[in-house]
Image (cartoon, rainbow, N blue to C red; front, side, top):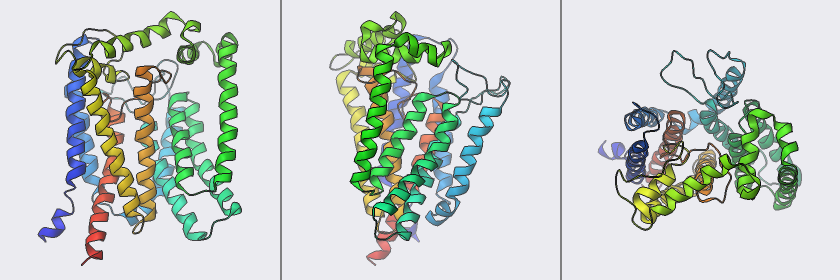
Length: 393
């Protein structure tokens, strides 16, 4: 009995989660010194989000892999219906913010909810099942079966991406597309197909970027006045001399904050450089200013350890539960694209988007969804421990 209870204590994951929580609360506490929102205590709110996320992790442990496998299609459909409900909801329930209708945020409710954050998980879960079922049916893959799998994966991802683009939220849609690309690679589809797909997508994105850079005014006319800032962000990323002063200002302030921390930072409550959304989009700049290069490097190390855990767990669980392996790699893709994009925009190698730094940026939907995703990872780790123990008995 004692041995069975120990299965549910995954020390490495628990330590990582605690370290992320500590890093998040310290960073948000320092970001709060800028007093962007008077009377708001983001630290206490973040603690509440982590508490709810902890309940999510605990709740998932009552499910087993077979239940998640069989229920994945219903979870996926539920996510699609949630996005559809958001789209048709009136302004009293889902108000547009910066031209995007991405949140359930009724005026009478104290909290907001971004469905797309949770639908990422349901999409990854169902993509994992689609790959697993296809592999069971086609034990020997060929060009025809690989093409069929590609169509299944693209169709599964296309529906949520379409509904998210209707909001419109181009940045979040790109996260889904990146996850799809990674899942295609992990699924073992022929490299002939993958290289052809990469060439086509690269040509499309290259043409789109060339159009925006060479004809910015026409691009702004196409997207409409409410989305001009997105064109400015791309121009700032590609060539700051072509963009507006407002778009450059975000980059300049983030650079200034990050660089001013130097090697060891300014210490707690040492934040001096003002910039908007410090507790969310630009939380890594706060970390750099407060704790310097050393603090930023330690945060990146935490993500490296999490990604390493996801890779090793995904490879280990494959022989017992293949679909769980694909979920680990899909969740890895989610964390990877968020970290690369968020830190990348802070240091200027990626355009500015509203993509948060997972487990560190302030935000209820982001924190709860990531914790829920980690709950499934935790359950997979428990399952591997149990199966591995039985194997060697």
